[in-house]
Image 1 (cartoon, rainbow, N blue to C red):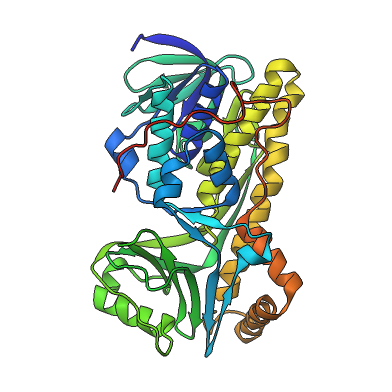
Image 2 (cartoon, rainbow, N blue to C red):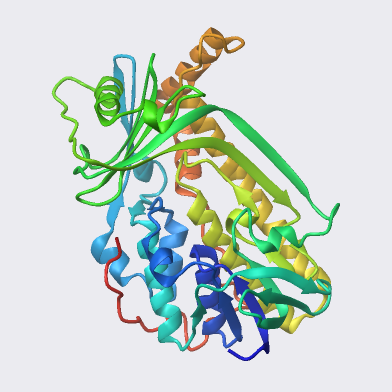
Length: 418
């Protein structure tokens, strides 16, 4: 790698946001360089959630990268709610114009995006840490890498997470962080066990929340509400399965069990950074916003960030007014806050308030009212379904056609990962 290079867009981070942006830029002929601190193997092996909103599915299809997703993913039309002695199935697809989700693990999305970028001639510089972002962020910023190389770019796309160099480069006073530490905590785990239902299950009992989420035909994700102060060591496998049977159990229903292959404590925290741009530096994904796993919004928001930035940069290429760049924050923030509101509401719909929580009994009754309305009110259910499925795709706009037509040729599918 030459010691100093220049490019139109330097993309920091090869996760869903960074790789989606790289693919979109490549398809309209905009030079970009992608830098990633982890190795190729670690990037492709990171197991993450995989509930794809309809707009994410549509975008992958429109750029020719949806073939393996449709072949190996599972269409998801509804979820089940269990509380007390009550259970009901919410067919959110039917509630909202027959629009489904697709269950397809994030690492597989990343593999498809990487294959697409490389098939188009792109290259990711793996195992290269961005040490600092320097230069004039309002003019020609540059990044200094761990191998001593320097990349000067017209624009920087910071998709390197909440602790990356992109956020560290923001000048003091140039942004506001809106944060919330939620009053619930999860033990989240993956089990080598076939799903016990063909849909997501949200359950709430006196002991707390439990979630059953689809991953693959052989692996299931589970979440358990646990007390603050507990550690992973406090939750041996036997205790985990006992609590899952208790909280998820229903007469005639069997919980499929198997080896627990990973388990972690998850602090439920949310954050939104505004604005999402400073000069020529744009924040995407976790660098710009953190959201709880409730509702499966994180990866979808990150990919929507990439699609929006591609649209904004395309517009700026024809109208170099700096005000055009403000559209990135203006268009993304309402969507991000809508997702935050939904995730927050879903958390409070399904968790058990500890007895020492102020007004715990009142809150629990409000929770039951929300569940009753979801089951019995068509208008309430429609609003839930719209938020769960997510908004429509904003890419491409008429002023931003795809090079060579509305659909790019498919690229060879990568080997399955993990």
